[in-house]
Image (cartoon, rainbow, N blue to C red):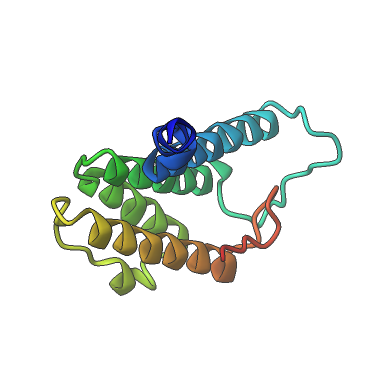
Length: 143
């Protein structure tokens, strides 16, 4: 009985904590990669002059991670959504913005909000993978 109590009360049993940890890890990973690219620390990585600005693409990705973390923490992510829309609008020249019209999320329904963020994240990744072949990620694929 004590073993089961310890197991069920551990960090491993807390699914939300695991998800938050994964998003924090992804955020740190993106930060390190983007910083390395911007500082020229990755050899052989040359910027394609026809590619969109790395700052705009990286901002979309970082805002997307922060948006997921906000929903997990019960914080309204609308400002991050607006930042993503603004950056995507500049990157795509205004096309494909109808997909990302979002009303205020009901954060009280945690499961529905997380499900919405999953779909939203996949939609943004799909747009980036179709619209851009930006470095260092080549073609970005989200599953």
